[in-house]
Length: 493
Ligand code: HEM
Image 1 (cartoon, rainbow, N blue to C red):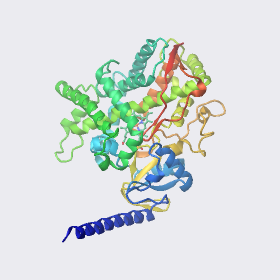
Image 2 (image 1 turned 120 degrees about the horizontal axis):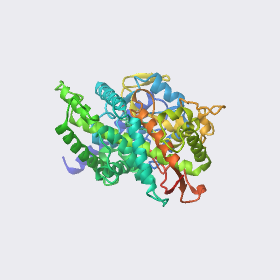
Image 3 (image 1 turned 60 degrees about the vertical axis):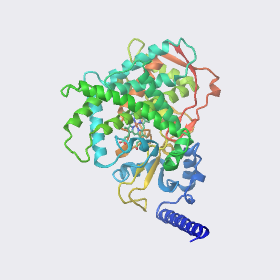
Image 4 (image 1 turned 135 degrees about the vertical axis):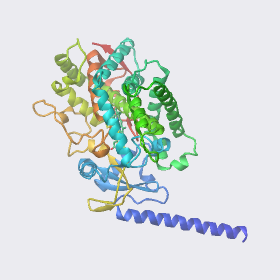
Protein backbone atom coordinates (compact mmCIF):
# COMPACT_ATOMS: atom_id res chain seq x y z
CA UNK A 1 0.00 0.00 0.00
CA UNK A 2 1.45 3.39 -0.97
CA UNK A 3 1.68 6.37 1.37
CA UNK A 4 -1.31 8.30 -0.07
CA UNK A 5 -3.66 5.28 0.31
CA UNK A 6 -2.47 4.92 3.90
CA UNK A 7 -3.18 8.58 4.51
CA UNK A 8 -6.69 8.26 3.03
CA UNK A 9 -7.41 5.21 5.22
CA UNK A 10 -6.18 7.06 8.29
CA UNK A 11 -8.38 10.04 7.42
CA UNK A 12 -11.44 7.82 6.96
CA UNK A 13 -10.67 6.12 10.29
CA UNK A 14 -10.30 9.43 12.15
CA UNK A 15 -13.45 10.90 10.57
CA UNK A 16 -15.42 7.77 11.54
CA UNK A 17 -14.15 8.01 15.15
CA UNK A 18 -15.03 11.68 15.20
CA UNK A 19 -18.55 11.11 13.85
CA UNK A 20 -19.13 8.19 16.26
CA UNK A 21 -17.98 10.29 19.21
CA UNK A 22 -20.24 13.14 18.23
CA UNK A 23 -23.15 10.78 17.69
CA UNK A 24 -22.55 9.34 21.20
CA UNK A 25 -22.52 12.88 22.64
CA UNK A 26 -25.82 13.78 20.97
CA UNK A 27 -27.39 10.46 22.00
CA UNK A 28 -26.37 11.06 25.63
CA UNK A 29 -27.74 14.58 25.43
CA UNK A 30 -31.12 13.45 24.07
CA UNK A 31 -31.99 11.70 27.40
CA UNK A 32 -30.75 14.52 29.62
CA UNK A 33 -32.38 17.87 30.47
CA UNK A 34 -32.11 20.53 27.73
CA UNK A 35 -29.06 22.68 27.24
CA UNK A 36 -26.94 24.33 24.56
CA UNK A 37 -25.95 22.12 21.61
CA UNK A 38 -22.37 20.84 22.14
CA UNK A 39 -19.70 20.77 19.44
CA UNK A 40 -17.52 17.70 18.92
CA UNK A 41 -14.58 17.52 21.38
CA UNK A 42 -15.01 21.01 22.79
CA UNK A 43 -18.59 20.50 23.98
CA UNK A 44 -20.03 23.83 25.16
CA UNK A 45 -16.70 25.61 25.57
CA UNK A 46 -17.98 28.36 23.24
CA UNK A 47 -20.74 29.17 25.74
CA UNK A 48 -18.35 29.16 28.71
CA UNK A 49 -16.22 32.16 29.47
CA UNK A 50 -13.24 30.45 31.14
CA UNK A 51 -12.47 33.75 32.92
CA UNK A 52 -15.87 33.68 34.57
CA UNK A 53 -17.58 30.27 34.22
CA UNK A 54 -20.02 31.15 37.01
CA UNK A 55 -21.42 34.11 35.05
CA UNK A 56 -21.74 31.93 31.93
CA UNK A 57 -23.59 29.22 33.89
CA UNK A 58 -25.91 31.84 35.41
CA UNK A 59 -26.71 33.13 31.89
CA UNK A 60 -27.54 29.60 30.73
CA UNK A 61 -29.73 29.22 33.84
CA UNK A 62 -31.78 32.24 32.66
CA UNK A 63 -32.22 30.56 29.27
CA UNK A 64 -32.71 26.89 30.22
CA UNK A 65 -34.26 27.08 33.68
CA UNK A 66 -33.44 25.28 36.95
CA UNK A 67 -31.95 22.06 35.50
CA UNK A 68 -29.92 21.91 32.31
CA UNK A 69 -27.10 19.95 30.69
CA UNK A 70 -23.74 21.39 29.76
CA UNK A 71 -20.78 19.61 28.15
CA UNK A 72 -17.41 20.39 29.74
CA UNK A 73 -15.44 19.22 26.72
CA UNK A 74 -16.90 15.83 25.81
CA UNK A 75 -18.34 15.19 29.29
CA UNK A 76 -21.99 16.03 30.09
CA UNK A 77 -22.82 17.59 33.47
CA UNK A 78 -26.17 18.37 34.99
CA UNK A 79 -26.34 21.94 36.32
CA UNK A 80 -28.73 22.48 39.24
CA UNK A 81 -29.93 26.04 39.77
CA UNK A 82 -31.99 27.85 42.38
CA UNK A 83 -32.86 26.75 45.91
CA UNK A 84 -35.67 24.36 44.99
CA UNK A 85 -33.76 22.26 42.44
CA UNK A 86 -30.58 22.11 44.55
CA UNK A 87 -32.54 21.11 47.66
CA UNK A 88 -34.56 18.52 45.75
CA UNK A 89 -31.39 16.87 44.44
CA UNK A 90 -28.86 17.21 47.29
CA UNK A 91 -31.27 16.80 50.22
CA UNK A 92 -34.49 15.05 49.08
CA UNK A 93 -32.54 12.70 46.75
CA UNK A 94 -29.37 12.93 48.83
CA UNK A 95 -28.31 9.30 48.44
CA UNK A 96 -28.39 9.40 44.62
CA UNK A 97 -26.77 12.85 44.32
CA UNK A 98 -24.17 12.36 47.07
CA UNK A 99 -21.24 10.92 45.10
CA UNK A 100 -18.20 13.02 44.21
CA UNK A 101 -17.53 13.81 40.55
CA UNK A 102 -14.01 14.03 39.09
CA UNK A 103 -12.24 17.30 39.77
CA UNK A 104 -8.93 17.08 37.93
CA UNK A 105 -7.18 20.04 39.63
CA UNK A 106 -7.33 18.02 42.86
CA UNK A 107 -7.77 14.49 41.58
CA UNK A 108 -4.57 14.46 39.49
CA UNK A 109 -2.70 15.02 42.74
CA UNK A 110 -4.70 13.13 45.37
CA UNK A 111 -5.37 10.19 42.98
CA UNK A 112 -8.55 9.48 44.93
CA UNK A 113 -6.81 9.08 48.32
CA UNK A 114 -8.06 11.22 51.20
CA UNK A 115 -11.60 12.29 52.11
CA UNK A 116 -12.79 14.84 49.62
CA UNK A 117 -12.27 13.09 46.27
CA UNK A 118 -13.30 9.54 46.89
CA UNK A 119 -16.57 7.66 47.03
CA UNK A 120 -18.30 4.61 48.53
CA UNK A 121 -17.65 2.92 51.85
CA UNK A 122 -14.05 4.20 52.15
CA UNK A 123 -15.25 7.79 51.90
CA UNK A 124 -17.97 7.17 54.50
CA UNK A 125 -15.46 5.61 56.88
CA UNK A 126 -12.89 8.40 56.51
CA UNK A 127 -15.54 11.11 56.81
CA UNK A 128 -17.06 9.55 59.94
CA UNK A 129 -13.61 9.15 61.54
CA UNK A 130 -12.59 12.74 60.70
CA UNK A 131 -15.83 14.28 61.98
CA UNK A 132 -15.56 12.30 65.20
CA UNK A 133 -11.90 13.24 65.68
CA UNK A 134 -12.64 16.95 65.15
CA UNK A 135 -15.51 16.68 67.62
CA UNK A 136 -13.38 14.84 70.21
CA UNK A 137 -10.68 17.48 70.06
CA UNK A 138 -13.42 20.06 70.51
CA UNK A 139 -14.34 18.40 73.77
CA UNK A 140 -10.79 17.66 74.93
CA UNK A 141 -8.60 19.51 77.37
CA UNK A 142 -8.50 22.58 75.20
CA UNK A 143 -11.66 23.18 73.24
CA UNK A 144 -11.57 24.30 69.62
CA UNK A 145 -13.22 27.52 70.78
CA UNK A 146 -10.23 28.24 73.04
CA UNK A 147 -7.80 27.49 70.22
CA UNK A 148 -9.58 29.98 67.94
CA UNK A 149 -9.80 32.63 70.68
CA UNK A 150 -6.07 32.27 71.36
CA UNK A 151 -5.23 32.46 67.67
CA UNK A 152 -7.45 35.53 67.19
CA UNK A 153 -5.55 37.26 70.03
CA UNK A 154 -2.22 36.50 68.30
CA UNK A 155 -3.63 38.19 65.22
CA UNK A 156 -4.76 41.22 67.25
CA UNK A 157 -1.17 41.62 68.48
CA UNK A 158 0.17 41.22 64.95
CA UNK A 159 -2.28 43.81 63.60
CA UNK A 160 -1.37 46.21 66.42
CA UNK A 161 2.27 46.04 65.29
CA UNK A 162 1.30 47.50 61.89
CA UNK A 163 0.70 50.87 63.67
CA UNK A 164 -2.07 51.85 61.27
CA UNK A 165 0.16 51.67 58.19
CA UNK A 166 -1.49 50.19 55.07
CA UNK A 167 -1.36 46.40 54.84
CA UNK A 168 -2.67 43.67 52.56
CA UNK A 169 -4.58 41.45 55.01
CA UNK A 170 -4.33 38.28 52.85
CA UNK A 171 -1.31 36.62 54.44
CA UNK A 172 -2.23 37.82 57.96
CA UNK A 173 -5.65 36.16 57.72
CA UNK A 174 -4.29 33.08 55.95
CA UNK A 175 -1.64 32.43 58.64
CA UNK A 176 -4.00 32.77 61.58
CA UNK A 177 -6.81 30.65 60.09
CA UNK A 178 -4.36 28.00 58.90
CA UNK A 179 -2.92 27.83 62.43
CA UNK A 180 -6.32 26.77 63.79
CA UNK A 181 -6.51 23.71 61.55
CA UNK A 182 -2.73 23.10 62.01
CA UNK A 183 -3.23 22.96 65.78
CA UNK A 184 -5.89 20.25 65.31
CA UNK A 185 -3.86 18.27 62.75
CA UNK A 186 -0.31 18.71 64.05
CA UNK A 187 -1.08 19.37 67.72
CA UNK A 188 0.52 22.81 67.77
CA UNK A 189 0.38 26.23 66.19
CA UNK A 190 3.29 27.72 64.27
CA UNK A 191 4.95 31.05 64.86
CA UNK A 192 3.74 33.51 62.18
CA UNK A 193 7.26 33.74 60.71
CA UNK A 194 7.74 29.95 60.61
CA UNK A 195 8.73 28.91 57.09
CA UNK A 196 6.42 25.89 57.20
CA UNK A 197 3.33 27.95 57.97
CA UNK A 198 4.25 30.51 55.31
CA UNK A 199 4.75 27.74 52.75
CA UNK A 200 1.38 26.17 53.59
CA UNK A 201 -0.46 29.49 53.44
CA UNK A 202 1.15 30.89 50.29
CA UNK A 203 0.94 27.57 48.39
CA UNK A 204 -2.73 27.14 49.23
CA UNK A 205 -3.55 30.76 48.41
CA UNK A 206 -1.69 30.49 45.11
CA UNK A 207 -3.52 27.26 44.21
CA UNK A 208 -6.89 28.77 45.12
CA UNK A 209 -6.15 31.72 42.77
CA UNK A 210 -5.05 29.43 39.90
CA UNK A 211 -8.01 27.08 40.39
CA UNK A 212 -10.24 30.17 40.18
CA UNK A 213 -8.75 31.45 36.89
CA UNK A 214 -8.93 30.17 33.26
CA UNK A 215 -5.89 27.88 33.72
CA UNK A 216 -7.69 25.94 36.45
CA UNK A 217 -10.94 25.83 34.46
CA UNK A 218 -9.17 24.57 31.32
CA UNK A 219 -7.27 21.96 33.35
CA UNK A 220 -10.59 20.66 34.68
CA UNK A 221 -11.90 20.26 31.11
CA UNK A 222 -8.80 18.85 29.39
CA UNK A 223 -6.47 17.45 32.08
CA UNK A 224 -4.76 14.96 29.73
CA UNK A 225 -3.83 17.66 27.21
CA UNK A 226 -3.06 20.41 29.75
CA UNK A 227 -0.63 18.07 31.53
CA UNK A 228 1.69 18.49 28.54
CA UNK A 229 1.25 22.24 28.10
CA UNK A 230 3.09 24.97 29.98
CA UNK A 231 1.06 27.41 32.05
CA UNK A 232 0.04 28.41 35.57
CA UNK A 233 -1.75 25.08 36.12
CA UNK A 234 1.66 23.37 36.35
CA UNK A 235 2.28 25.31 39.59
CA UNK A 236 -0.70 23.64 41.26
CA UNK A 237 1.18 20.38 41.59
CA UNK A 238 4.50 21.87 42.70
CA UNK A 239 2.56 23.82 45.36
CA UNK A 240 0.90 20.62 46.56
CA UNK A 241 4.37 18.97 46.63
CA UNK A 242 5.68 21.66 48.97
CA UNK A 243 2.84 21.01 51.45
CA UNK A 244 3.28 17.24 51.12
CA UNK A 245 6.94 17.57 52.15
CA UNK A 246 5.94 19.38 55.36
CA UNK A 247 3.14 16.91 56.16
CA UNK A 248 5.43 13.91 55.56
CA UNK A 249 8.00 15.28 58.02
CA UNK A 250 5.23 15.78 60.60
CA UNK A 251 3.96 12.24 60.02
CA UNK A 252 7.47 10.85 60.54
CA UNK A 253 8.03 12.68 63.82
CA UNK A 254 4.54 11.75 65.01
CA UNK A 255 5.25 8.07 64.30
CA UNK A 256 8.49 8.24 66.30
CA UNK A 257 6.82 9.77 69.35
CA UNK A 258 3.35 8.18 69.18
CA UNK A 259 1.76 7.07 72.46
CA UNK A 260 -1.43 5.19 71.50
CA UNK A 261 -2.92 5.92 74.93
CA UNK A 262 -2.46 9.69 74.60
CA UNK A 263 -3.26 10.82 71.04
CA UNK A 264 -2.24 14.46 70.66
CA UNK A 265 -3.94 15.39 67.41
CA UNK A 266 -5.54 14.25 64.14
CA UNK A 267 -2.33 12.63 62.85
CA UNK A 268 -1.93 10.56 66.05
CA UNK A 269 -5.57 9.39 65.86
CA UNK A 270 -5.08 8.39 62.23
CA UNK A 271 -1.82 6.53 63.00
CA UNK A 272 -3.65 4.57 65.71
CA UNK A 273 -6.36 3.65 63.19
CA UNK A 274 -3.58 2.52 60.83
CA UNK A 275 -2.20 0.21 63.53
CA UNK A 276 -5.68 -1.22 64.08
CA UNK A 277 -6.33 -1.67 60.35
CA UNK A 278 -6.64 -5.39 59.63
CA UNK A 279 -7.62 -5.25 55.95
CA UNK A 280 -4.61 -6.01 53.79
CA UNK A 281 -6.55 -5.57 50.56
CA UNK A 282 -8.22 -2.20 50.12
CA UNK A 283 -7.78 -0.66 53.60
CA UNK A 284 -9.14 2.81 54.52
CA UNK A 285 -6.39 3.87 56.89
CA UNK A 286 -2.95 3.88 55.25
CA UNK A 287 -0.16 6.45 54.74
CA UNK A 288 -1.31 7.96 51.45
CA UNK A 289 -4.83 8.24 52.78
CA UNK A 290 -3.52 10.12 55.86
CA UNK A 291 -1.34 12.37 53.71
CA UNK A 292 -4.17 13.33 51.35
CA UNK A 293 -6.77 13.69 54.11
CA UNK A 294 -4.44 16.16 55.84
CA UNK A 295 -3.99 18.00 52.50
CA UNK A 296 -7.82 18.15 52.14
CA UNK A 297 -8.25 19.53 55.66
CA UNK A 298 -5.47 22.10 55.28
CA UNK A 299 -6.84 23.29 51.94
CA UNK A 300 -10.49 23.21 53.00
CA UNK A 301 -9.71 24.76 56.36
CA UNK A 302 -7.51 27.64 55.24
CA UNK A 303 -8.55 29.41 52.09
CA UNK A 304 -12.34 29.25 52.44
CA UNK A 305 -12.46 30.84 55.90
CA UNK A 306 -9.73 33.40 55.22
CA UNK A 307 -11.34 34.40 51.89
CA UNK A 308 -14.71 34.87 53.64
CA UNK A 309 -13.02 37.08 56.26
CA UNK A 310 -11.12 39.03 53.61
CA UNK A 311 -14.30 39.53 51.58
CA UNK A 312 -16.20 40.43 54.75
CA UNK A 313 -13.80 43.17 55.81
CA UNK A 314 -13.86 44.62 52.29
CA UNK A 315 -17.68 44.77 52.44
CA UNK A 316 -17.58 46.35 55.91
CA UNK A 317 -15.16 49.04 54.69
CA UNK A 318 -17.60 49.83 51.89
CA UNK A 319 -20.47 50.05 54.42
CA UNK A 320 -18.91 51.58 57.58
CA UNK A 321 -22.35 52.21 59.13
CA UNK A 322 -22.85 48.41 59.26
CA UNK A 323 -19.39 47.90 60.82
CA UNK A 324 -20.24 50.58 63.44
CA UNK A 325 -23.51 48.86 64.29
CA UNK A 326 -21.65 45.56 64.85
CA UNK A 327 -19.11 47.37 67.04
CA UNK A 328 -21.94 48.83 69.14
CA UNK A 329 -23.40 45.35 69.60
CA UNK A 330 -19.98 44.02 70.60
CA UNK A 331 -19.56 46.86 73.12
CA UNK A 332 -23.00 46.16 74.62
CA UNK A 333 -22.72 42.37 74.85
CA UNK A 334 -18.99 41.67 75.24
CA UNK A 335 -17.49 44.98 76.29
CA UNK A 336 -13.77 45.69 75.80
CA UNK A 337 -12.28 43.72 78.69
CA UNK A 338 -12.76 40.12 77.60
CA UNK A 339 -12.60 38.11 74.37
CA UNK A 340 -15.82 37.33 72.53
CA UNK A 341 -16.98 33.74 73.00
CA UNK A 342 -19.53 31.51 71.29
CA UNK A 343 -22.08 32.03 74.07
CA UNK A 344 -22.31 35.70 73.01
CA UNK A 345 -23.72 34.69 69.63
CA UNK A 346 -27.32 34.31 70.74
CA UNK A 347 -27.30 37.88 72.10
CA UNK A 348 -25.80 39.39 68.93
CA UNK A 349 -28.49 39.04 66.23
CA UNK A 350 -27.22 41.90 64.08
CA UNK A 351 -23.66 40.56 63.95
CA UNK A 352 -24.99 37.09 63.15
CA UNK A 353 -27.15 38.50 60.35
CA UNK A 354 -24.20 40.39 58.86
CA UNK A 355 -21.96 37.28 58.93
CA UNK A 356 -24.69 35.27 57.20
CA UNK A 357 -25.21 38.00 54.62
CA UNK A 358 -21.43 38.09 54.01
CA UNK A 359 -21.55 34.34 53.32
CA UNK A 360 -24.46 34.82 50.90
CA UNK A 361 -23.08 37.86 49.12
CA UNK A 362 -19.45 36.67 48.90
CA UNK A 363 -20.56 33.19 47.80
CA UNK A 364 -17.01 31.95 48.22
CA UNK A 365 -17.41 28.48 46.63
CA UNK A 366 -19.85 29.28 43.80
CA UNK A 367 -19.99 25.87 42.10
CA UNK A 368 -19.62 23.77 45.26
CA UNK A 369 -17.39 20.79 44.43
CA UNK A 370 -18.59 18.52 41.62
CA UNK A 371 -21.02 15.77 42.49
CA UNK A 372 -21.95 12.65 40.54
CA UNK A 373 -25.05 10.48 40.48
CA UNK A 374 -24.31 7.29 42.43
CA UNK A 375 -26.81 5.12 40.55
CA UNK A 376 -29.39 5.47 37.77
CA UNK A 377 -32.10 7.80 38.97
CA UNK A 378 -35.02 9.92 37.82
CA UNK A 379 -34.93 13.65 38.49
CA UNK A 380 -37.78 15.93 37.50
CA UNK A 381 -38.89 13.36 34.92
CA UNK A 382 -35.45 12.84 33.35
CA UNK A 383 -33.62 9.52 33.52
CA UNK A 384 -30.15 10.37 34.80
CA UNK A 385 -27.62 7.57 34.33
CA UNK A 386 -25.18 6.53 37.07
CA UNK A 387 -21.95 8.50 36.94
CA UNK A 388 -23.44 11.69 35.39
CA UNK A 389 -21.63 14.69 36.81
CA UNK A 390 -23.62 17.28 38.71
CA UNK A 391 -22.79 20.94 39.37
CA UNK A 392 -24.81 22.45 42.23
CA UNK A 393 -24.64 26.12 41.18
CA UNK A 394 -24.59 27.63 44.68
CA UNK A 395 -24.47 31.17 43.24
CA UNK A 396 -27.94 30.62 41.82
CA UNK A 397 -29.15 29.63 45.30
CA UNK A 398 -27.51 32.61 47.03
CA UNK A 399 -28.82 34.96 44.36
CA UNK A 400 -32.25 33.33 44.09
CA UNK A 401 -34.80 36.19 44.07
CA UNK A 402 -37.52 33.88 45.42
CA UNK A 403 -35.46 33.33 48.60
CA UNK A 404 -33.68 36.64 49.27
CA UNK A 405 -34.57 40.31 49.00
CA UNK A 406 -32.63 42.77 46.76
CA UNK A 407 -30.19 40.00 45.83
CA UNK A 408 -27.49 42.21 44.29
CA UNK A 409 -27.27 44.53 47.28
CA UNK A 410 -25.56 43.71 50.57
CA UNK A 411 -28.56 43.47 52.85
CA UNK A 412 -28.32 42.02 56.41
CA UNK A 413 -32.14 42.31 56.61
CA UNK A 414 -32.19 39.00 54.72
CA UNK A 415 -31.39 37.39 58.07
CA UNK A 416 -33.42 39.55 60.46
CA UNK A 417 -37.12 39.44 61.31
CA UNK A 418 -39.30 42.51 61.87
CA UNK A 419 -38.30 42.57 65.56
CA UNK A 420 -34.57 42.58 64.78
CA UNK A 421 -34.15 38.94 65.78
CA UNK A 422 -31.83 36.68 63.82
CA UNK A 423 -33.76 34.71 61.17
CA UNK A 424 -32.35 31.53 59.55
CA UNK A 425 -32.79 30.96 55.85
CA UNK A 426 -32.31 27.43 54.48
CA UNK A 427 -31.42 28.86 51.10
CA UNK A 428 -28.07 29.98 52.49
CA UNK A 429 -25.81 27.07 51.48
CA UNK A 430 -22.18 28.26 51.50
CA UNK A 431 -21.21 24.79 52.75
CA UNK A 432 -23.46 23.10 50.14
CA UNK A 433 -26.01 20.57 51.43
CA UNK A 434 -26.83 16.89 51.81
CA UNK A 435 -24.47 13.96 52.29
CA UNK A 436 -21.41 15.82 51.00
CA UNK A 437 -21.98 19.00 53.00
CA UNK A 438 -18.70 20.61 54.05
CA UNK A 439 -17.03 18.57 56.73
CA UNK A 440 -15.63 21.69 58.42
CA UNK A 441 -18.94 23.59 58.63
CA UNK A 442 -19.16 23.89 62.41
CA UNK A 443 -15.46 24.76 62.75
CA UNK A 444 -15.83 27.40 60.03
CA UNK A 445 -18.90 28.94 61.68
CA UNK A 446 -17.05 29.21 65.02
CA UNK A 447 -14.05 30.81 63.30
CA UNK A 448 -16.11 33.35 61.38
CA UNK A 449 -17.97 34.51 64.48
CA UNK A 450 -14.90 34.68 66.73
CA UNK A 451 -12.62 36.37 64.18
CA UNK A 452 -15.15 38.97 63.02
CA UNK A 453 -16.09 39.92 66.59
CA UNK A 454 -12.55 39.85 68.04
CA UNK A 455 -11.11 41.96 65.22
CA UNK A 456 -13.95 44.50 65.22
CA UNK A 457 -13.79 44.71 69.02
CA UNK A 458 -10.19 45.87 68.67
CA UNK A 459 -9.97 47.68 65.33
CA UNK A 460 -11.79 49.73 62.74
CA UNK A 461 -10.82 48.73 59.20
CA UNK A 462 -10.07 51.82 57.10
CA UNK A 463 -9.71 51.67 53.32
CA UNK A 464 -6.73 53.34 51.63
CA UNK A 465 -8.89 54.59 48.74
CA UNK A 466 -12.31 56.29 48.61
CA UNK A 467 -15.07 53.95 49.77
CA UNK A 468 -16.95 54.57 46.52
CA UNK A 469 -14.02 53.09 44.61
CA UNK A 470 -14.00 49.84 46.60
CA UNK A 471 -15.15 47.19 44.14
CA UNK A 472 -17.02 44.19 45.56
CA UNK A 473 -17.02 42.24 42.26
CA UNK A 474 -14.85 39.11 42.52
CA UNK A 475 -11.68 39.10 40.41
CA UNK A 476 -11.44 35.35 40.05
CA UNK A 477 -14.28 32.93 39.67
CA UNK A 478 -13.97 29.18 39.26
CA UNK A 479 -13.35 27.07 42.31
CA UNK A 480 -13.65 30.25 44.36
CA UNK A 481 -14.93 33.78 44.16
CA UNK A 482 -11.80 35.75 45.00
CA UNK A 483 -12.29 39.35 46.21
CA UNK A 484 -10.31 42.11 44.54
CA UNK A 485 -6.98 42.86 46.13
CA UNK A 486 -7.07 45.68 48.70
CA UNK A 487 -5.01 47.36 51.38
CA UNK A 488 -6.39 48.63 54.65
CA UNK A 489 -5.27 50.40 57.82
CA UNK A 490 -6.17 48.96 61.20
CA UNK A 491 -7.14 51.76 63.53
CA UNK A 492 -7.19 50.66 67.19
CA UNK A 493 -10.43 51.41 69.03
C1 HEM B 1 -16.37 29.44 55.16
C2 HEM B 1 -15.70 28.31 55.15
C3 HEM B 1 -15.98 27.13 54.26
C4 HEM B 1 -16.76 27.04 53.14
C5 HEM B 1 -17.55 28.15 52.45
C6 HEM B 1 -16.68 25.66 52.67
C7 HEM B 1 -17.36 25.16 51.59
C8 HEM B 1 -17.34 23.84 51.19
C9 HEM B 1 -18.10 23.32 50.09
C10 HEM B 1 -19.05 24.12 49.20
C11 HEM B 1 -17.80 22.00 49.99
C12 HEM B 1 -18.33 21.02 48.94
C13 HEM B 1 -19.53 20.28 49.48
C14 HEM B 1 -20.16 19.39 48.42
O1 HEM B 1 -19.46 18.64 47.76
O2 HEM B 1 -21.39 19.47 48.24
C15 HEM B 1 -16.85 21.67 51.03
C16 HEM B 1 -16.32 20.41 51.25
C17 HEM B 1 -15.34 20.15 52.18
N1 HEM B 1 -14.83 21.03 53.11
FE1 HEM B 1 -15.40 22.95 53.38
N2 HEM B 1 -15.85 24.96 53.51
C18 HEM B 1 -15.41 25.80 54.50
C19 HEM B 1 -14.59 25.47 55.56
C20 HEM B 1 -13.98 24.25 55.75
C21 HEM B 1 -13.11 23.92 56.85
C22 HEM B 1 -12.77 24.84 58.03
C23 HEM B 1 -12.66 22.63 56.65
C24 HEM B 1 -11.71 21.83 57.49
C25 HEM B 1 -12.00 21.27 58.58
C26 HEM B 1 -13.29 22.15 55.43
C27 HEM B 1 -13.11 20.90 54.89
C28 HEM B 1 -13.86 20.38 53.84
C29 HEM B 1 -13.75 19.00 53.37
C30 HEM B 1 -12.78 17.95 53.89
C31 HEM B 1 -14.69 18.85 52.34
C32 HEM B 1 -14.99 17.60 51.53
C33 HEM B 1 -16.14 16.84 52.20
C34 HEM B 1 -16.50 15.53 51.51
O3 HEM B 1 -16.22 15.36 50.33
O4 HEM B 1 -17.08 14.67 52.20
N3 HEM B 1 -14.08 23.16 54.92
N4 HEM B 1 -16.59 22.81 51.75
